Length: 423
Ligand code: UD1
Image (cartoon, rainbow, N blue to C red; front, side, top):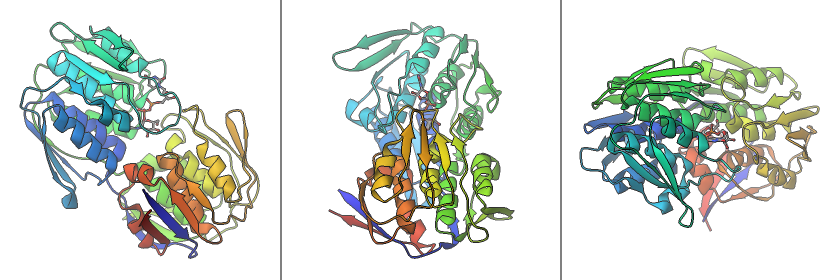
């Protein structure tokens, strides 16, 4: 088991280049199963979750050629595919459920173990299944084995689907399945995240007819056949936000390159409210935490374009270091405060009151032995370690490596002290 040893080396300075988006590439990789032709994806980040998705695609019979140094993956799904993804892989990553829609639409059935991933709440898949049912699938559970099976006689058909919550994964799974359905599908109250737009753009390049991605209603006219294509994934907005906060928490001055500023508006707004200076430059976003005295603010996580739940824990680490009290309210996931125990070991003094966390601010963080309980919680602890007195030892960094490409190397490039050691 590897861990990170982090020490405070003062403000971060310099430039960092953001990788392709984890949350874009995973649904796009799953959607390659919709075509018999080869598809090429570019700007793929080198991540554990991408590795797991490669293994899942291979396990159903696709061929995967990886060229990580150049960020290129070519996937061929011309063979007869298996309709089932192995439970050991599915349990390692919740996004594995995104193969269900493409397999169901292509071959009429998909059997999946109930998914795993970060331990941040119940995370059901009822909305995904509701969509498949409206498109003509029957859903059965093998409760003892923990499987769910979706089946259809012939092609899925179009339908009108209202999502009770704008779930990112459900929007993606249903949109991909509807691309090959017979007739028109309208999905209402959909997620509007940039990753939804990226997937829609990718599907349209394959020959799909998807309209409205990025708004709250998506209309998909099903087609009979999708062809191969090549697609660049968008930059990772959560990695972008994490490095912006790294600059702020160390009171540094960092240019974050390969970013889409519109995708990180809530992070820009909240850093600015705290007194940071964020400027758009031709090559990216410059974040300065060294200009003003920084003060607290309130955060409430919401579906896009609200403040992203994935930035909640890194931002909370930052709020512990500024002057004055802040309140953080998590509304997207029910159990996403596990980092608080760990930040409190470092002297943060955060209290939980219902769905909110009260962050007193003005903390003098000190190094401690802490555990990365999920992907973003782990990133939060690394950021806290960059500003704490003494050494912070972060265990279970496998979670961090699921979603941050070369995290330690990129931080070192900005002057941080962070070492990866094997236990
Ligand atoms: C995706 C992101 C994850 C991010 C999350 C919210 C990927 C690979 N992961 O996860 O990083 O934190 O969006 O922005 O893109 N829900 C239901 N029923 C469902 C589906 C979801 O009740 O069928 C609930 C979940 O329990 C959760 C909320 O909806 O409380 C949001 O989940 P969802 O938007 O589906 O997140 P993911 O797609 O899993």
